[in-house]
Length: 291
Image 1 (cartoon, helix red, strand yellow):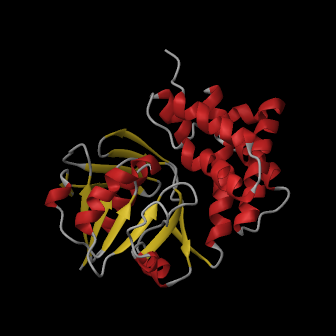
Image 2 (cartoon, rainbow, N blue to C red):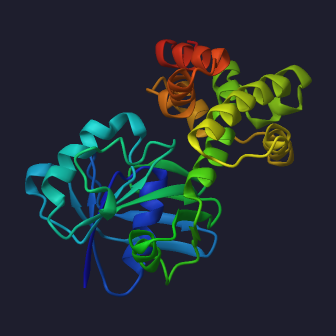
């Protein structure tokens, strides 16, 4: 029996937990702020419903074989409180978060026991423990011991677990998509705004900064990545709302630092100016939604 703790039960965390609970051989504990009795996730393959073992106090947690951190990036300190109790000498930790700083965000952990995960699972939370998973999606991890062990946890699920020998490039490609999403959050307009030529060019400019910094960090990124990303926005549902847009609408903190600020910070390290991502980070962190 593999003991698994899932820290964070938002849309993605709840979806991940539901599939882990449904698989044989897993003893799953959910770690959350808000208690709930029933976990119900509507997936493309049907409804997964269970009565999970749920903790709301880190002091009550015990070491697990695997800990999956599925919180917002800005809640790393809160996740660390759980990690302090859940991580033992043999524990592996999977970081399912946005950005490219999966290792450095939790400096007390042994990097050899971390599986950094790029998440592409569209899902929406209706209420605590009640989630709609729009697509089975994918989880991308390095093709190493920790990554392969993580992928094995989902062997019985329809979620595509992708092993890559160039995780850095995959992470920066995802960051290119995420950094462009600042346009949606700043304009409070869904994905269809990419059909506006001025908005689309602003997205491309944000991505060009991301490409320059990503290459300096060692990622292999094509020249036409800005066009690829904008085309992706244009080909998807026009009413789609990304997570940073949703957070701003709800007047919650946003992941601007992990999606745009990181490009500015790492750009400064390499002497690369990134004024648009720096502006997006500052405005989204300090701004509020409209009344």
